[in-house]
Each structure stands twice: as structure tokens, then as C-alpha cells.
Length: 621
Ligand code: GAL
Image 1: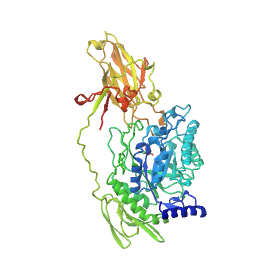
Image 2: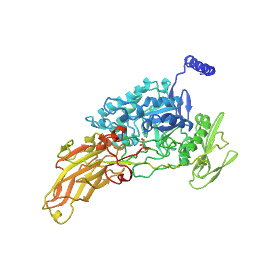
Image 3: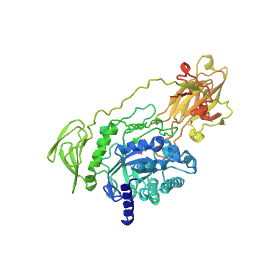
Image 4: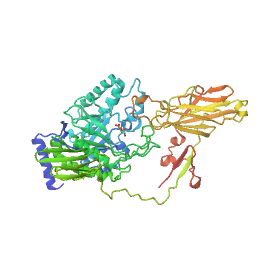
């Protein structure tokens, strides 16, 4: 530390001491107030378990260079408490490290504890064991749930306090969040929902963090909790009290991808327009959801059917590279907003009509003036007269004038030369494959019952896969055998994917979708006289993360399972003996690890399996 810096630090410490100033975060109708100063805060979501700790410093630095003031993250309960009372805060779940890195970069943190987080994350962040706590019902006025929620929330708050991470203690956390978009659920379930909202707010405030709490999409957020907006546009949002600032906790920079679905894109121009429009209308906190989306590693994604990539078309792409022109276009926007900040925090805007679909929002205070000029027409260019000047505006755009005269930025004018350059990889990847055999009822390590069982109840989500296996005995004198016909097998499943094997051969695959996970397999199948092995491999592609009481949604083959076309008519297989096996062989061998993968023989070169069921692939680069 140089002498001058040293003197500065001593002076500041003296002042904190003598002047009696303590760190604090409060709010008024205009803005979040940090250490007595109203702030226009630009925030971005980076979820720590969606990247590796090695990536964190670079992501955070890029966020800072991109003009952010705040990093926003959820807290991922199921990663932190994999079994009751057993906590984990290492590696990608090292929350303290992540928050400290943001602090070191000079950024604030908005900690959305939830602990319900939605987020396309398995079971919305709840540990699967929570579902099996006796008498529990999630996210309502239910004692076992509230006890568990309070315990985890308090655990996180005390962890942050121990590390002095709240701004009131000199740390970077200026805001927290309790629950997540509970408003729509409360609306649906009524009285117990209302009681739960009150309880959640009181419980959170009682934890005494010294920084404000928000509840997003929660019109009735009890004081002093701030209700905030989530959406693609939020310019018309008003908080439930005129003593609370207008905050936008999720401005969706793109959208998530589901398996087989389109890859969503949101133009940089529209994103910038939405932010400028919110700020000109008096908004003072905007968070990009996501600023870096990252990756759903392992089996963390919920959904259903949410893809491994959580790129989100965010300003930083899945790998942490600048997604241009979005990153640069927003950086320039943030610069223009920062230049306007003194005027924006000093006063409320005055709105002037400048003609059809044209408006100016003017923030004029002693010593500061900033104006935003908007063209809401989606098709036509406009010329707007404002003050002594004339301004050209592209359609659906806002110009920012930090001195009320000079345009420094227009949301629709994206600079050129920022487009992504792709370089092809020259050498081909050398893939290898390994095929495992379908499981069958003769296997000794399976469990059995005269019933079809719900999938997650059996697996406890230790694997996506559950085998349902049974024997189908066919008499040699069956009519269909003589006529060369095949009986019709029908399998009803609550979801999400089903592979049907008969005597070791794949007979078909069916799957549900994000909107409706239920599925039915119905096809004629080849059976032989004597014993036939029917093996159904049911796959749960992530557990639901949103919807009223999503914890009660089932997965797996619940039946009926029937066989039609036998001499006896239709045979109901649902209540005969079924054996169960959790997981795939490759999973128990840990084929995805270095040591596990050496336990089997891999096929290489031209013999690598193509379009065969139950194939594992690996590649090394
Ligand atoms: C919001 C929710 C987020 C995320 C987002 C979609 O409604 O609060 O957690 O799920 O939708 O990506």
C-alpha cells in the first residue's frame, strides 16, 4: 500500500469513528440508499453452482467491466444440505468464497435466499428429502415446512454474518430475498397462502441482517419488505407503497432451453430499450436474469426437460465469453445511465409529450439534468424536438442525454464489429462407446412388489433411471402365435421418458414434454411362447421446479399396463409381480469418472455404436 493510500485509509477509519458513520442500507421511494446515498444500481445474476470456482474471478471481473454494481444469486439449498443436517459449502457450492470474490472486485451482492428459488433447478432448490418429511406441504402455512425453511434461512444468514458479509457489517450484501414469485401461488390457494406470506416476511426480517429484504412478484409483500417486478418489461410496475423504490429483480436477457426446444434469443436492442424505459419511469434497480447463465452440471437441472446448457442468451455466454453485441451494447447503456445518475436520484421525472408515440422524461434538479427521449413506434423513424435541439430516433428506441442536451446513447443503435467469430476445430473427436445390457427381472439385486410404484419414492432421486421389470407368460396355444400376430402392449406413465424392452430388445421409446410430462406407450409387440421378459426403463428428466404443490407431482409407470389380443382378452399386468432396479449399470460403475471408466471395455473407431439403446459415449480432447 502506498503512503497516500495508507493515509486515506487512516483518515476514513478516523472519520467512521469520530463522525459516527456506520455502514447501512435503507431505502426511500426513489432508490436503495447505501451509506446515506441513493443509488441507481445495475445488477446481474450469476449463479455460483452454474460455473466452476476457477471461472468465478473472470466472470465477476467481466461483470464489473460491463458496468454492473451488483451480482445477484440465488442460494441453492439442495446443494448445501444434501441430507438433513449435513451441510456442504465446498467447490461449486462455496457460497462464502463467491460472495467474497464479488466484494474483492468492488461489487455489491443481492442474495436471494429463497429458499424456494424456481430457477429451472431440481425441485426449485428444495432437497428431495424434504418431500418425505411427515406431514409436509411446500410453500404454505404448514408447520413442518416452515420449520425447515426457517432453519435453512437462519443457517445461511448466520453463515453470512460469521463472515461479516452483510453491508451493515462492512460486507458486500446490500439486499436479500425471501421466497420467490409467491404472489401467483398465494392467489391460487388463498388464506393459507396469505398467512404464509406474512410469516415468511416476519421470519426474514426477524433475522436482523441490517439490509432490506425483497419479495419478487408479491403484490402484498408486508412492510418493510419491498415487492419487486420480474418480466421482459417492467416500466409500468409500481411497488405497493409509495415509500418503496421501484425495483426490477429479473429482466430476462433471453430464456432457458429445454431438450429438443428452440434456442431462445432476445435482441440486445430490445433489452436495452426495456432497461432505459424502466429507468426513465423512475426505476432505480435493474437486475439481468441471467448476466451469466452457465451450465446445469450433473443432475442439477429441474424443469422438466431443461437442457444442460443454461446459456440464456445472456451477456456472458455459457463459457463466460462476451456475447456480442449484447455485452458491449449494455456496457455503453450502463455508462450513459451512470453519467445521468446525479439527476436520476435527485428528483422524479417530468413527462413531456413530443408528438404521437414520442415522449421525453426529464430529471431536472439544481446542478443536474438528464433526459430520456423515447420513440415507442415499432416501425417508423421519428424526428423529435426537445429544448433547442432536434433528435433523430429509430423505431422502438430511447436516447439518453445525461446533460439534457447531448445524446450519448440510443438503445437501437448497436455498434458494428462486435459480432462473434467462430473458429472451426480442425481435428475430429475420437468417440468411444460402451453398451450396457437392459436389466431384467431375473437379476438378484432387484426389489419386488405386486404393484406399480411411484418413481421418485423408490429412487429418492439418486438416479434419473428406474427399471420396472416383469414376466409375461404366454401359452403355446395362443391364437396370436398361430396367426403370426402381435398383441398390443399399453403402458401408461406419469413421465417423463419410457424405453420399452422385450426379451432384451428395444420395442420403442416415448416421451412427454415440458407442458405435459405424461405419456402412453401403445404398440404391438413380439412375444414368444413361454416366458417373456418385459423391462420398462423409466426416466425422470429433472424434478419439477414450479407450480402449486409441485412436490406432489408423480413420475414413473403408475399404470395401467395391459396386453390385448390374447385368448383371454385383455390381461392387466399392473398388479402382477414387478421387480425394481434403481439406476443404470454405468452409473454404479461411475463410468463418467476417470477410474470408473477404466472398468469396462470401450469400442473405438468405426465400430462405435450408433443409435443403439443404452449406449455410453466418451471422448477425450
Ligand atoms: C422466473 C423465476 C426464475 C426463473 C425464470 C425463468 O419466474 O423467478 O427463477 O425460473 O422465471 O427462467
